[in-house]
Image (cartoon, rainbow, N blue to C red; front, top):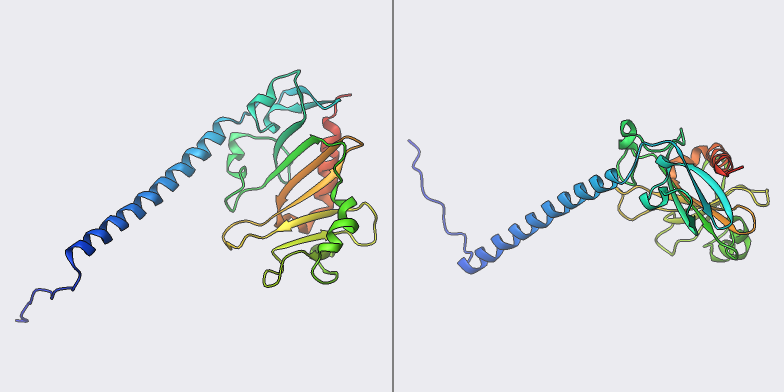
Length: 236
């Protein structure tokens, strides 16, 4: 029979052991609070959306639009007849459709299944689009010269030393006023990388849309379909 001896002393003072136990309990409580908070935030966002597809008549500045209710992210912007300086839309790629409960998993910024395209249409009389800023701003900020980018695009790296590839501009080479987008990659490898593009819609409207960087491989179709959609939402 193997003799069994009680474990020896750990050398930890009782006060230190108590402090360590309290610290572990606080960390566990913070983790649970973060998880519950994220769940409630996701639930709240779900409750503020609608499946209603009837168009909402509204104005952005002096321009009339008719936008399906399930594309409008904010409930206060689903009230017909109001005028706004900025309107927020959410769609999913590639259908460019609004919210439905069957596709709820595809909405939101996080998660591998997220396919959200976030759009903003704003009154902006002075602001330039990204195409106008390519030569005047981005080329001056670039670290080094042009480099090959994804799907035939050209890339300008804007990130500082040691962070190459975390902040860059991609553009369609050899075409004035063509596709230009800015992409930012978070330091957390688990977090998704996003790109954004700004396009002038006439003299006083600016369209901004945000999408996952993975969609760059289909940037031509993405850009064309979004511009066509926004044009179709204008009230005749």
